[in-house]
Image (cartoon, rainbow over all chains, first blue to last red; front, side, top):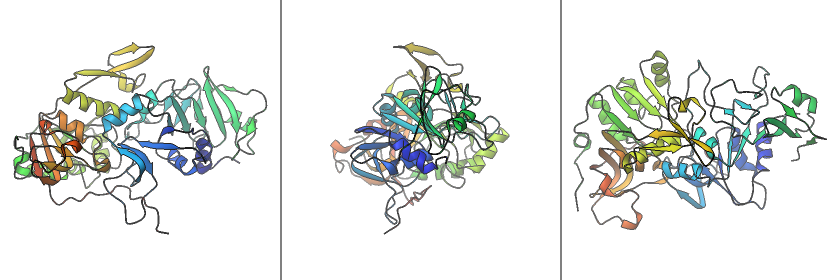
Length: 218
Length: 233
């Protein structure tokens, strides 16, 4: 069975390390916050100027002056802090944030990512994505392995306008966990019940399969 | 104490004209200068270039200026959530310059800090870097980005004093501090205007030196774009 969006988030959460500051993008990445492993302390950074982001506020306590980068009302946890956008991106470009998790339309085998623009369609903008991918030490992409037409989103080369070059290190899809190195996708784990063959067929880019590929554990 | 207080929004916006370049603080609808935007709509000035992270929604924020076709060009990082914006952009009525959010923030900061340009890694190898100088530092490639040159900056703060010292609240801070530093004329509207001496100097986010005019705002709507809550258990 391919993973649900929640399971993709749950698998990515296993990558979190103690004392990391983490920026979560909109969509599946946001769900990662629901699955922080026990015994691990992380703080979430929201690029609109918030560290120590907490869950959605209890109904009736929401504050228009406290939102996340997705413009959703949120809370701030003990130990959290507030700052302006220039300082926020100083944290990001200065590599004080250890992990960025974001979605993508396409990822290439050299680590290129495209996630902001489809030619001919309304372009909403890149927001903070270009700053995040240009600077983060660790970038994990959370996405579906194929698009709605069944075409691979893990490519030899991105066809869409790029967000960043040679920056993605890891991809977690509904089918697999893959590492990007030496210009290829390396299959690390497969979703429970998904065969290596299925993953191969759904991956257009070069896929390296070494030895037995274990199933993901939850 | 140099007094920066003006009596109302009309006085605060004295001198704004057609064709000017403005900075407007806010992230989404959070921390936007609601009073200044309303007054710009009332004045009906046109051909404006607006530097703002977002472009409001159809019926609020910068969306109000878009409805009246007062904006010629938007410089933003993200402009979703606005149908009228989309219509004007696709029809070519509205010029749009999309730039990475961190680059936008730093360009605002640079403007006020006397830095004409700086190198950033954001956008290298993408269409954002097309036509721009690039340079390698320590094995990594960077793009040269320039400061802005706005005539006015419109800023929303939580509290301010007569000397123009400002304190922001929550994530309504966002782009407001850098824009306050960047305006040739910086106009600040506050939820609470107090006498000089009433704010603790240790707690000031933006010193009054950056502010030319400050006024007591009114009728704040502070709309929420995405009301997300945890149900009461």
